[in-house]
Length: 212
Image (cartoon, rainbow, N blue to C red; front, top):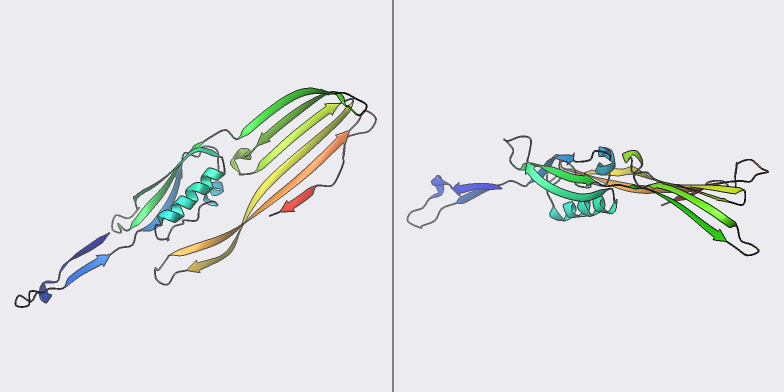
């Protein structure tokens, strides 16, 4: 947005010249709103957003946030929208609204099979339950169980995302503008239990953790 016009005091009729002045306002994000998330918590969505209040509106940065939200697979639809800001006296400050539509992230499976031969397990059954967004917290987990010839095994896999702020950089060119650089740490672990008719349920190995 900009406002401008001819400075009356600078008009020179003989030379046919005048000074034209413009006041240019840079569009900045004043508020970031999220709508439509009936299950996923606001903080889970905001940790994937890099465009925060105080930053200049940048279509490339908004597009990158859009792609990050789609990659979570929590939503069937993601739409960014720019609306007037909360203060009508500052039209350069806008509200960035993210409209999301939730989708199902949990699944369950049941299976049966037969494995023959000397080393075969015979008739066996499997059960699996997984959720990529457990209780809207962004935590992914999967539980699976297998039973065959009196032996039962269970496995649990989990993935947690943790965000740590590396620092805040403030811009001197645009007062009140700031950006936060965040580092993502993904913790994955696997836990397995096994039990037979003659022995109680016990862990078969210590949990394995992976950091990225």
